[in-house]
Image 1 (cartoon, rainbow, N blue to C red):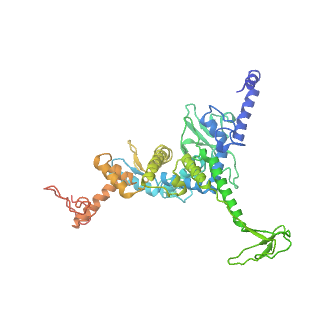
Image 2: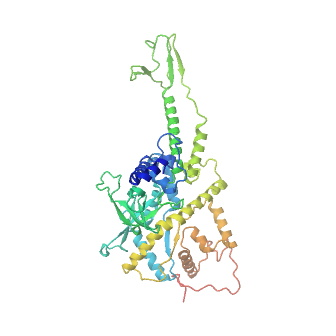
Image 3: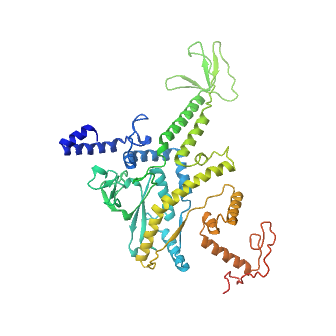
Amino acid sequence: MNPLDRVIGFFAPRTALDRARARAALSLVEGVRGYDGARIGRRGNGRSPSTSANAEIGPAQVRLRNRVRDLVRNNAHAARIVDVLAAHVVGTGIVPVSRTGDAALDKRVNELWAAWSDQCDADEQLDFYGLQTLAVRSMVEAGESLCRFRPRRLDDNLPVPLQLQQLEPDHIDGTKHGLLSAGRDVLGIRFDALGKRQNYWLFRDHPGDSVATVYESVPVPAAEVLHMYRKLRPGQVRGVTAFAPVVTMARDIADYHEAALVKARIEACFAAFIKSEDNGNGGVPVGPETKGAKGERLQSLEPGAIMELRPGEDVTFATPTASSSFDPFMVHSLQAMAAGVGVTYDQVTGDLRQANYSSLRAGKIEFRRLVEQIQYQTVIPMHCAPARRRFIDAAILAGKLPRRAQGYPCEWIPPANEPIDPLKDLTADILAVRSGRMTVPQFIAGWGNDPETQLAEIARVNGLIDGLGLVLDTDPRKTSRAGLTQARPEGTVLPSTDVSGDPAA
């Protein structure tokens, strides 16, 4: 509060309160704080020092979100960044595997989850892993994702009477905030006296939808909402797009690229210029002649044409200029843009001209650390785990699963990281397992598979092969990497199996 407001507050507290409310509303409209990408006017407008995360996000969020969406729609590099992050964070899905300790119950839970995940989308178009991808894309592009639980009736014939409705974060009414609200609301979220999320103020329809009929927000219990965003500062309650540091840079890159294209196109339009001393009123055309928009003579050249000029005429051919700064500017700008968003330059551009195994691996190691951080600190705890808990609760209430005091723990297995050089990477993994740096289950999980399921399948296949009396080059129990028969310790007895592959009792 400035000195004038303090003086007014001493003599007229209500008037001072009205001024504070008006100033807060004006800051929401003008969006002058925080992010260059949401700033109005010239670069370098004054920043607000020592502000909280919510004070910076609030005024800038809507404008920043809209500008990034425009970038993703119209900028190839921005669209590529969203695709890359969604593909690496989710891939084909971050899959839960039940870990109750009861093999029969685990199988039952996994089968029920698989059946439910195919029908969990309230829009009836995606499965649970498709909703994961949609949520991550929204978080990268808009800064956050929003999903509502939609309980269903038992007679809806769903595996579990529950569905998920993915929404855009625009549904959160950010005007429910501070002095503009009657409760303890921060950017559209109501908190109780202990600081716990109590309600979300949500619009019934998307506020930007042309067919929306109701623009009034209603409180929805926080327990009914999945709100996912990267929490970058303590106390931050809303998300910020990953493009926030590079919005202005991305536009500069696009403008420079367009200017270079326009320059090249203009230069390519002029092949030659005819100079004449008769002011263009005579002369022999050097090619087919047309009239321009202002009546000027336009002539075209054809391959193999023989030109005959009259005395006093001369032809000067255009010499398009080449800009030596274009490539360095684009490369360095795109490198900075990629670094600002958290991906590598080659992922944004596909430019692998100077890449090799070492450089690619070094870049991917840091990128994978970022992806793992997003997976285990954002996507799983904010989206996957709450959805799983709600699924278990709905299944218990519907009588599909028994109530257990120990609950239903599970392990989330993210997609595998594709190797840069499969032979080198696999050799390194084998050495890591043999040296004890990594266990076999960790090795299997690192390739996106459930260790227990994978080992059980290996045992089943080995039993089937042994029962048929086969010895394969790919069986490390019997053949070495060179294809030689492995020596077995004396007295080793292989387990007896039948031809179905089931070990004999």
